[in-house]
Image (cartoon, one colour):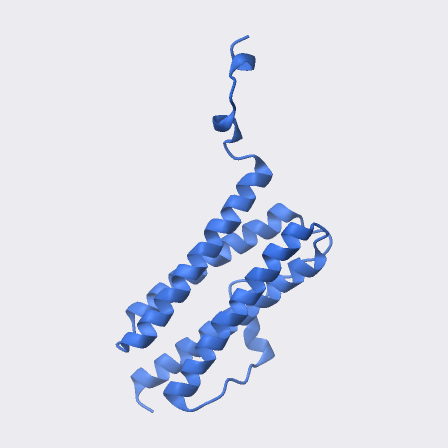
Length: 163
């Protein structure tokens, strides 16, 4: 296998591990949330990450004729795969972890896309980067709704400010 092929294979496998870690993280949060709306959002994120994994695994098979076989110790290499949460983890803390991970994931995919000369793979990687950015934006909006980010801009009256 040429060096370029070896690097591409490692990049795809690394991306798959990242997706597994993100999926597991979001699934754990969804299972621990009592709020139905929050549970649904994190379940959907988990499913999205599983979809990314499936796309990447199909490319691994397409380019190298290999099926992906995960190694548990490598899961900790993902942005959030090694981060544990429990019943003491607050919603804001979980959102902050996820937001940071989505930023890193988007940057990772854009970097990988820039490094490939296979147009279809570049398009796939950029598409996943865009989806990760969408996750970032949704999580950021969720965080802002919890902390009340700039809610006062939407208020109809400023009378209490003028006393």
